[in-house]
Structure formats: structure tokens, C-alpha cells
Amino acid sequence: MADARIDPSTWPELQLRSFAVRVPPAFSEVQQFRYGESLQIRSPDDGSAWLDIDHRNSYRLRGEDDDWRARFEEDLIDALTDIYATVYRADCTRLHRTERTIDGKPAIDFAYRVLDRGWDGTQEILRYQRWVGILAQGHVYVIAFRCAFADWETYDPLVEGLVASFRQTMPLKPAVAPPPPPVPTPAQQQSHYTRGDLEALLTEPVVAYDPTTVHVVLPVLGDGLAQIVLDDQNADHEPAADFPDSGVTDGHMALLNRLVALGPEARARIEALLFEHYRLCAGVTDYGVVKHPMDDPFDLKTPAAAYGQAGFREVMLSADGRLARFVFYPIWEDEHGCLIAWQNGTWSTTDW
Image 1 (cartoon, rainbow, N blue to C red):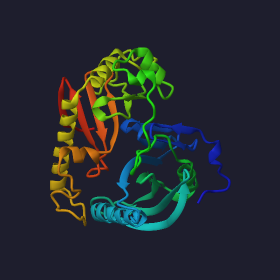
Image 2 (cartoon, one colour):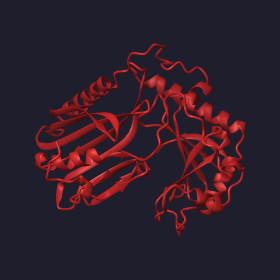
Image 3 (cartoon, rainbow, N blue to C red):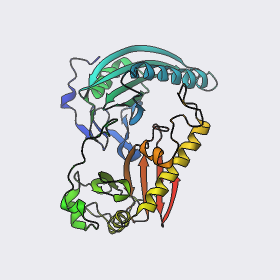
């Protein structure tokens, strides 16, 4: 556990869209991935010292009696056995299993020592891994800390301090009975947005070439507020030239107002694409023991039923106004998610 001589409260806090952690000063090289949901931290003085932090919705409770800790542990052991022991010929030794509280929520924490011998069995690379599952509002969120340390005992107090400092910054979607939607502001009640409206709704300070968010009502998704990411990249994934200090481009404005005007036919198309994605995943995925037939493991017989279990997360708008990507984490693919793109009036499923 944490070294008493180390005080994580003195470390600078790094805030991303989904989470925040306090970063040890020794790890000064930082990269963000997946629009602020993954983080890699490196030490400039020690090439073997690095951490990946990946915060994502990986499980949903199957009921009040679901033993999520046992399920998380079983899946972790399977992954270590299948991937590391089989592919990399590694020896995996558990260092600890701890039930604890993180960010005020129940959590389970594992640490492993992994001796990786490589594809041909001729290497010996010592790795230290930390896997944490946090239960919040009916979901189990996974944080994976993967470290390659020459001397893992030296770095373990730093990893522990970083784990303990984790806090969630993105509101979670309730798993059961959602609360009443917030009362929209005048800007959110209207059917057309101005630049002033969006800038007034920005949820965080804007930094050049850093996507920010607003929360507005999109009728195509229902009456609640939807999180909208104003991306700093164009539809071709290249950084937008002359990105404004406000974080709001003319492309964002035009695309958002086109989305606000979408009618029932667009909702039907989204539901149909999600249903197609569900049927495709059901045909190639083994979900284990389920109560329903394998070709319909979650008993979703209509597009509307699939949409009801689709786990909408957010809509990402390209800076040039040519691409909107609707991000879902559905019950049938809550690890990788499902992206539905709207570009030039055409709907399709797409990749990250």
C-alpha cells in the first residue's frame, strides 16, 4: 500500500473528461487518447516506467444479487490466462486482492506480477499490473493500470497514490429508474442555437485544440439533455486550422442546428442501425450463460427495444461541420461501444 512518506495530495491533479487523477511529478510525459477517456503517463528519466489508465464502462449489473466482484475477478483471471500465459508465455502471480472504497464508491483492487517471456520464450520482461473495478449507479467501471517497471516495489507507492486519487468527473447514466430530466434553460428549449447560446453553455474552460462539451436537447434522442462534444478535429480527423479560442466553430453551429431539426425518420434510422449491430454481435459473440436463445441473448426483438438498451453516451461534432458521431455503449457491446455516423445526410455505423 501507499508509502507514508509519499503525499499524493501535493501532486498536481490532471483532469480529463471522464476522470481525474493526481500524477506523481516523476511522470511528466502525458498523452491522452479516446477523447480524454484513456491516459498514458511516462517518466522521462526511466524508459521502463509507464502507466496506462483506461476508464470505461465495462459491466452492467444483472440484478440486485449480481456478484459483480466475482465476475470481475473471473474475467480478469481468464484474460491473464488466455493472453499473457498463452500468447506471451508469461508467469502471472497475484500480489494482492483488496476490497476497498475509491471516490466514495465500493471497489475491488488487484495487483499482479507478470514475467513476460515474449513470443519465442527468449525474453524476460518484468511487468506490474493493477486492475480496479468501481461500482457506481448500477455500472462497474474498470480502471486498468499497466506498468513496466524495472523495480516495481519502488514504484508501487506511486501507483497506489494515483489509484487512491481517482475521482469520476463525468455524470453516470442511472441503471434503473432515471431521475426527472432537468428543466431546460431558454437556450435549450429553442429549436435553433446561436454562438452566444453555445458559449454560455460550455461546461469547462476551453484550451486551444482541446474538445469541450455542452448539454442541449436533441429531439431525435428524446426530451432529456444530451452531451455534445465540440471536437477540435475535422471529419478527416485532422486538426482544425485556426481553431477559435471559444472552442465553437461555424461548423459546430451549422451541424448542431441540423441535428436539432432531425425528425422521427432519423430516430427510426438510428434504432434500425443499433438493431443491426445487435444482431451482428449476437451472431459472433459468446455471452456465456443467458436466459434467452444465443441469437437473441438479451431478448431484444425490435429496433426500439435495442435502442432502449443502447446506453447513449454523447454526440461528437467535427469542427468543419461535416460529421456527427453518436456514441453508444449498448448492453451487447459495453466494452468497445457502437458509433453511428451522420455525414452528408447518410446514416451508418463506423469505427473509432
